[in-house]
Length: 242
Ligand code: UDP
Image 1 (cartoon, helix red, strand yellow):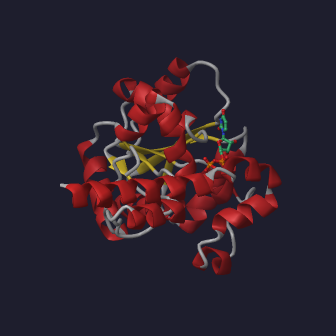
Image 2: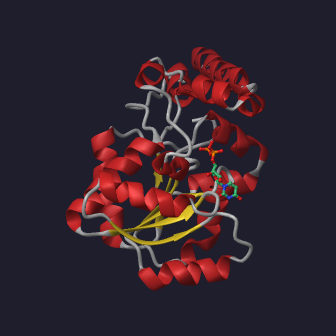
């Protein structure tokens, strides 16, 4: 859809697939593009390759689901990365598997680890590292020493997608996932929108109101839907001609 190969899966199917990738332990990666990331793929071949190189591409953001409907290629449901990560963490805790937390400001991943262990009793957090490192090699060595089943890569987009694509061959992990600001949410340093806003699909607006600097990032979103409509109209028009 608009240059990104989303997987049309339900939440349950996504988790089953993620479990299989964890079992295979081949450093597969998952990305959770919202409209902002899809638009970044239009401007950069490198970002497009990194996003489409993922084994699992799930729609995080109501704009993606709406655009897919407009294009006549519907996705099954919106799958917020934070909720998918919670399902995966719950599976890891139940099955004695481990997670490594990479990203966010110094101290945040440690705090997130403590809070996760309360929420998911039995969860093994085998390591943490902040997201402001200079050299990849030392961080990769630290991760590989633990051979985590799941690696949360929370460096913001598109840095995390590029990082996973570039380093997957050097990494020894089950599955990794680019999860933006999730560690801030798990640590409690940033709050998710209240359920009322989530249900109205206005989580993005809530985040913008809390951090007005984000308006700078979303002002192009109408362009995203207009582009989807244009593509759909072209498809209908070409179909009629054919
Ligand atoms: N971040 C990081 N390293 C960087 C830049 C950002 O670890 O070089 C972290 C930042 O501290 C924050 C997250 O990446 O925890 C990005 O959060 P944001 O909510 O902007 O991500 P989004 O989900 O919108 O992509």
